[in-house]
Amino acid sequence: MKDQRKVALTSFAFVLLMLIPGFTQTETVAEAPAATDIRRVNGGNWFVNDCQGYTDLRMDAFGDEAAISFTVNWNPHLIQFLEVKNGSNLPQGSEITVDKSQLALGRLGISIVSPTTFPQGNISIVRISHVTVAGFEAFTPSVTFSSSPTPQTTRDISGNELQSIFVSGGVSWGFCDARTFMTLSERPAVAGTAMVDVNISEFFSQFSGETSFRFSLVWDRSRFTLLSVQPGTGLLPGTTVTLDESRIDQGRVGVSINGTDPLPPFSQNLNLAKLQLSRVAGIDNGSFYVHFSDSPVGIATLDASGVPRFGSGLKVGRIAVGTRTSLTGILRRPSGQPLANTDVTLQGTPLSTRTSSFGVFNFPSISHGIGFRIQVRSKRYRFASLPIYLNHAADVEMRGLE
Image (cartoon, rainbow, N blue to C red):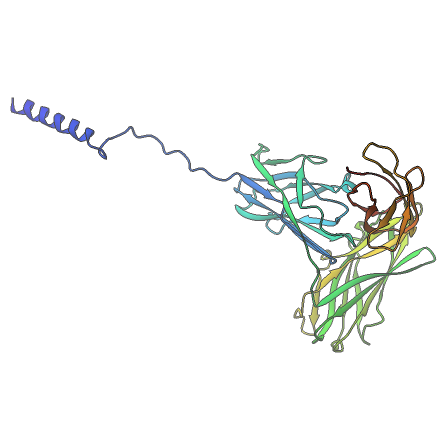
């Protein structure tokens, strides 16, 4: 009987405890997984200026990704693509494939396949080299992603699709403020060849012990073939120039300039080398880039002991083929009717004209490779200025606003 009373009292006490806040028991269940951010691909900060630069596209990786593809978009009137390569954090053996079929529209397709999974964390997956089109202000606020020409996908090592989002990158405007510049400048073409000088200049300070230089030059091999790379006129006696031609078939040559004596102080526009290219017969007219790269030979400036001395700002060069082109257009009222006798100017140039009685304007001779804005001066209507980059003859239409 006592045992029964003990059990009853124990049961009664347990019920009381169950009614007291803080003592209520619940069924034991597996803890729900903590919420985590979705894996992201970030468009980066595109700092555009008058120097050759690069932007890293980064990914917040979970560590299970082994392949990714996407299309990155920018305004082609503002940014011109130079080259793309694997990001610094991708596993060794990763292969990158690029689709340039829509590059004229500012779209670059990128596909990456890795033999192993990506490392976990915020990693660099792609580095894109680019340059600003001369004469433009930053009028496009962002770099975006799309699925054309290359679809957006992220997959694991077995090919299963993984959920991810692509975040637009920012565009900011600035000026290249490096104290030392390695530049490419075009010489007038001679007998069907293109001549490009490689120079080095330093501002506000002096050279100090530099004897040797390393860099690679890149050109469009569908338009030009390499004839020679010759020593520059600014090199000291005893300096040798050797070439790495292992990637000539890709339009690349590595250059190593080895000297024994340091450059003189306060040197300006020293000519390091001269690149001679031959134009491929039948190519379209236009203005085409020659730029620096770190492949097959990395960019460096060294003293006699092989110690790097400084970093250089890199300025790309252009080769003009068929140096002139034309721009025509028509101005229309908001109703669509032609707007006659109205001034049209090209901002940044001395060129201006007036529309005909049919609203047509014409600039018959403009240099290739120039970026500017078309501006309209009308007393009756407002016109938004139109940015344009001329690499071929163009025909535009502009309509006024009430």
